[in-house]
Amino acid sequence: MSKLAPGHKDAVYHTDCTGQALETVKAHSSPSELTLFGACFCPFVHRVWIALEYLGAPYQYREVDPYKKPADLLELNPKGLVPALKLSNGKGLAESTVILEYIDEKYGGKNGKSLLPTLSDPYERAVYRLAVDKVNRNLVPSFYRYLQAQQVGKQLEGAKEFTSHLSEFVNSMSTSGSEGFWDGKSLSVVDCTVAPWLYRATNVLKHFRGFEPEQLLEKDVLERWNKWTQAVFGLEAFKATTSTEDLYLDSYVRYAQNRPMTSQVADAINKGQGLP
Image 1 (cartoon, rainbow, N blue to C red):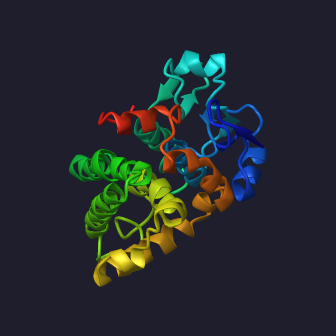
Image 2 (tube, rainbow, N blue to C red; image 1 turned 90 degrees about the vertical axis):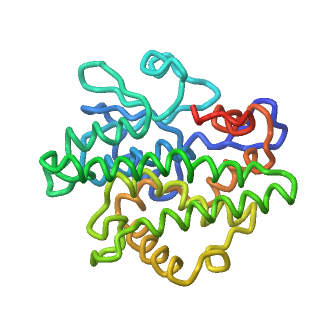
């Protein structure tokens, strides 16, 4: 289902997932140990959803209309932001990276899968957290600056900045492992953190800003990028939590046109502030 965003005559936003993500929602519509409050277009939610599916955690998915936030969401997170995670004891968690670590600590290792190195190796765990922090501080904000830029000159600056951070991220990937994931082994908290934006780069940024990795990345970087996208975007947990391309294109029109009242994230980017 799609609706017109308040104050936007022709800006559409969706309130239901599509494609494989919709099937996953249907499969997780009953009350469960965890309740994930999400929004179908939101990359911050996508981070957490991938992890829940990958680790096989028990959860119910609840779609939230971003312009009509339910009272029980506001009880968990007064800002009304998603994702929010409600636990079986009624307690709640907000902030996607915090939720990711909680999910891994609670459910990781039970099926032979984990998003972070073992607790017995605190240094390696710190290395993964540093990579996550760099994605949050650099790559993610540059995605929005690029997409929201309106003047051609600013868009060119945005393309340069985003490509630089993307190249830096790709260069941080392991080259010794046999798999395409960030650490060369398996899906990690780093992959979950960055994947939603890099996926949207391949459709949203491509559609609205003409972003083409093949033209912007150096040859060796492009090769590692392609290996990573094949591994992560081909993962069942990723495909099961991803909607059809039209949903993302419809949802990001208002970002691409930098319209007022788009989101708290868009407002923060326009004000030069950190992401909420």
